[in-house]
Length: 98
Image 1 (tube, rainbow, N blue to C red):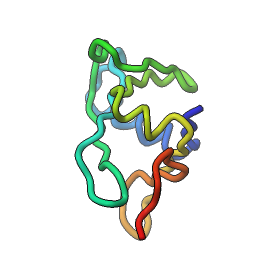
Image 2: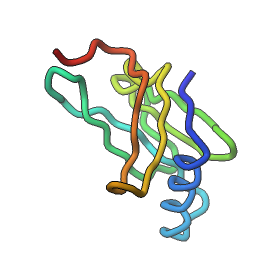
Image 3: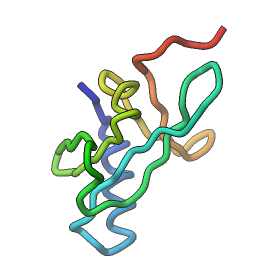
Image 4: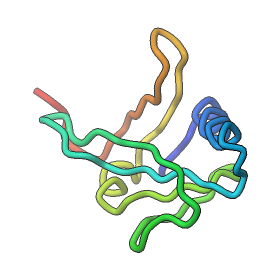
């Protein structure tokens, strides 16, 4: 099952709070990638799209695009401010580089 660390949950909730639209969720999409698999994009969404996998984690509504779910179903998403701001995804259900 997809896991969000407390830091990732806080950042996603903060992103929604910045928009001042508490009814929004986060949609996770996959984009074509290289040998290490897809890149992922986060977007705001009220309902997701048909076929999305809906999840509620600690009060945070997520909508995961089906092609992203294939890789993220057993992943862990964290967030770090240092050395650069961003989400860190580990445990992807895909083969790794090299």
